[in-house]
Image 1 (tube, rainbow, N blue to C red):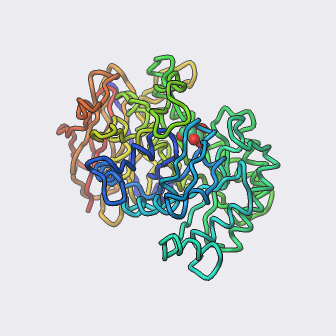
Image 2: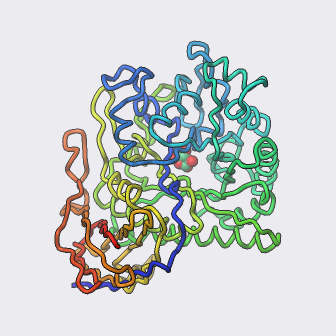
Length: 501
Ligand code: AHR
C-alpha cells in the first residue's frame, strides 16, 4: 500500500484564494449559447428564452465570473450588431467558427443571464479585426450611466442602468496564427497599452487582462509575455494563459501528469511578469488570469463534421470520461497551489462546448464527469490555500520525470473554521494512505469525505445514464491524536472536509 505524509500548518499560506479562480467561459460557438443557455422553444425556457434547467446546474457550480463572448469568436465580432431591437440586428457570417451568428443574444441579454446565474461578466474586446475606438465605445455603452451618445443608446435599448463590467479582456490569443488579426508581440503590446490607457482614462479601477501565450508550446513563450508587458505594464493588471490537455495516446500515467505542464506554464509566466517588474523598477505586480483551461481532445477529429453557416451546430462537444475528471481535479489543485498569483481562471467552457454541462435540444441537461471536481473546489475551496508539505511516493514517467502519486492542496476558511483537502491518487492499481498531521489546527473533526471513483476509467455520463459517474461518501477517514488517516482508493478524486475549533 502506498503512503504519503503531509503536515497542515495554518501559517503556511500560499495565497488568499480569489473566488474568481472558479470562473468559466461562454463563447458564441456551437451550442454554448444557441441550444445551450438559450433555447426559447424549450419547455424549461424562461420569459427571456433562457433554459432554467441549465441555469440551475450553473448555480450548482457557483461560478463567480463568466468570460464572454470569446474566444476566437471575439476577434471578428462587431459588438454593435448584438444590441438594439432583435428584429433589426443583422445576421452575420461567423468566419471564425464557420457559423451563422443571428445576434439574438448579445451583450445586454448575456448580462441579464449572468445576473440570473449569480455571476459577473468578464467581457473581452475585439483587438483582432478592430481596435481602440470599438473598445472605448463598447465601454461607454456598457458602463457610463447616461447623457452621452453610447450610454443613451443603451438606455434607448431598454437597459437603464449601466452594467458596470469590471474585468475586461484585451483581445484573445493574439499570438495564434489561427486568430483573426494575429499580431506580433510588439504590435499587440503597443495596441494593448493604448487600449488599456484609453479604458483606464474612463475608469482607473477597471481590471484589464492582456493576452499571454495560447499554450506553453507556443514558440514565443515566455518571450511573448515579457515583450508584451514591457510595452503595456502600467496599463494592464493581468496576463492571460490558456491551456487544454488530452489523452490522444491513451497513456494514462502521462495524461494524469499533465498538470505538471500547467504548473511549469504558470511558473514561467510569473517569472516573465516579475522580470518586467524588476526591469521597470515597478511597484505594481501583474497577476495571472488563466482564462481558458480544460481537457479538450475527444471531439478534435470531428471538427469538420457540421453544417457550416448555420446556427447552433454540434461543435467541439467533448463527452468526458472518468479519467478526464481526475485530470481536471489535478488541474484545479494546480491552480489553487498558485493562488498567490492566479487570481482569475476560467474553465473553458461552461455549456455543451468542452463543458461540464451538456444539453440536448428540446431534451434534458446533465452533469458531465468533470462537473464534480470543479463543483467541489468551487463550493468548498474558499479562504486561503495552504502548502501541505507533501512527502509522496512517485512513479517515473518519460515525459514528466518523477511524478508524485499524490496530487493535493488544502484550503482553510477562517470564517467557517473549515479545512478542506483536495487530493487525487494517481495510482491505477494501489490505494494510497494519506497521513496528515493536523495538530496545528487544535481539535478537529471530519465533516465528510467525498470520493469520485469508478472501476471504468472510460465511464461517462449521458442523457440516458446521467448518474453513471457520481461522487459518493466514504467513511474510513479518521482523526486520532491530531493525525488524519485517510485511504484514497486507486484513481480517485477526494474531498476531505474538516471542521476545526
Ligand atoms: O475554447 C475554444 C477555443 O479555444 C477558444 O475560442 C480559443 O480562444 C481557444 O483556442
